[in-house]
Image 1 (cartoon, rainbow, N blue to C red):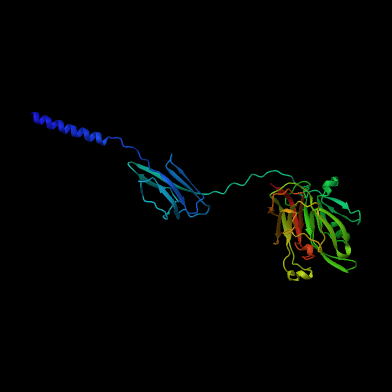
Image 2: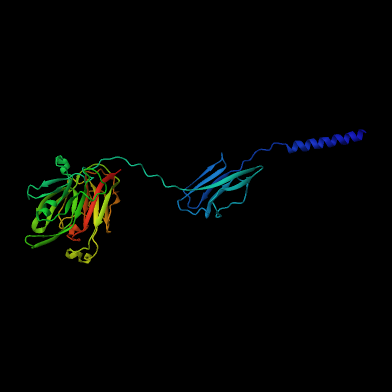
Length: 369
């Protein structure tokens, strides 16, 4: 009997030790994904709190073919299913892996496509007088005695009268209308709304002895001396302005005709469809820039005073207005002194080359910031 009790006690002791050994608390060794990177990714975020890896890939990336560029896991851990550098993953849906040390740890790999940053909300900034082209009056040139459509109200201040210039006085004197107040064909209708119409004309002077092309053109600045024998005038581009807008926006409608007036250097353009243009210049000139076509013109690529510049050409036949957005490219951080928006119904008008009859409608300009 005593022997039986001894054997029973031994059995109980063995069972007790076995249970104690099974319940022995071992030191926890967590398993982490230490580093993870896909080729061409935008970014990767590893969260130990949530056991997740979130990778952002570029817009347009193929989520089904993402190659592992960098991978590191806790030393001694086993990954199931196995991952290794160079492996191509299908990240179109989440991938779950298990890292095992003494215990098992579940990790999730996620991929997101980068979303373009929302554009900055539009900011209000300084505008020029009469960028809507709503304000007009009939003005009379003191020197030539010619009446013409002027881009300002009858009660405009002297500063407002100086914002938009043209060579209308000289062409009107010869009976040609190149800058016209448009009252029916508008980008935005409403009471007292108007638009700008620029029309290229073949002009004759001095009883037909002088023949030149006159493009419809307006600009920020003023017209100086006019030389009828050369069908040319001194034009001063620029009105005071010290801000840095990002772009010029507005509405346009172009109705070009083939180029039929050419100077010798541009004979190759004859017969090609004309183009209209809008350009914007921000500069820190000491004074407005004098242009006298074709002898003195502005080269926007080399002029050292230009801080920001943009130009757009219109080259298609249209029946209705469309909007345009003209970005301004800045070349330095200098502060402007002048702005010049220059619009023409024939882009080569400075060289007396274009299509007689080309028409460019413009409306509702705005500087954006």
